[in-house]
Length: 262
Image (cartoon, rainbow, N blue to C red):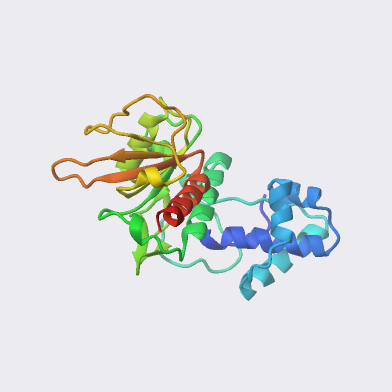
């Protein structure tokens, strides 16, 4: 039974774990133990502990509180929940509805999408912004339909050619991206996809590419592909799809593609 619960916004979860890792390491707790406590890989813990990123004071204070609970010998668990209420949380205790509790696999997908968003946030990607909403979708390992694919609700928010915010993550949204991702997984070993503007000079990048036919069917051929190009059709904007093993992998490609095209 949960005795006490602390709630943070989705975009703050990575910062909280980073602050806890730094706090525990400062208390002489080995990184291998920290990785088990926070359910992180040891290289990630090492990366967190050596980070100079400025973490907001409220996150640091919460991390200190949680660290004390851990060092006092109490166990902790990290869960991702989705709330369908617009009301803010009050107090320190919460009973979740059954459909608001996320499984470990879904939680990992959501965390990966959040990390991808944070990597992209504030970056000038003016040359890669399509007319339609830009989004990132990531699938479960055994995804069968769009309900097994998570994406940003209503896409990413763009202002001044930069990704600035999002309206949360949901499974079963972004029908086009999720359907295309599930279809492509029959031909290519991928788990994530992001739509960007049509890349005219794709050959100038260091990434491999192929094409989609008018009906979005895979042209075939190469298996090791980073970018898929669609020339558009009547009422359909030409676009590109960057694909990869997860959302962070896809966003890292997008950032590098943007740099190579400048």
